[in-house]
Length: 193
Image (cartoon, rainbow, N blue to C red; front, side, top):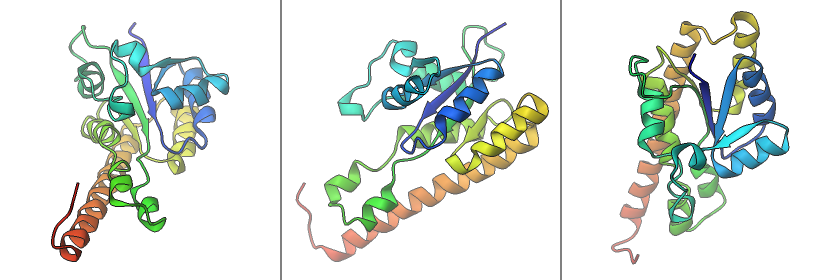
């Protein structure tokens, strides 16, 4: 039987240890990006760092962590290719672009708060909800725990509902960024980079 993997890539790590412990109790192995892995490991969770699993280190100061064919294939697989290790659960929340705006961050600081890998993970999981559970925010952790306790897994209907929520969230995230850029374009006749 293949290993069942869950991947954690989190800005907000609230409740992550408890969720990971529950998932491990139901037979999953945990993959995580470096900082998330540190939090989980400190909390007593056995975790494999994404870079160790893929064989590719994080690069560009952490800008590229989870964009890798092995991860994409694991999430998007239709579970027919024996050479692909499936990832069945994606726990991810996005960089806080809205908070950066509220805090008055500069344009260059805000650019670093645009999540790319996280959106990719979540959208891939939501697309492949037949097989994968997307978990887009800590507020859904308790639902996941309850599903595991009730069914031993997340039911297809809950996966579909989480996929809908995920697409709404990523769509809103992109609209927020687009609207902010529109304000900048309208405000300034030119921009130095």
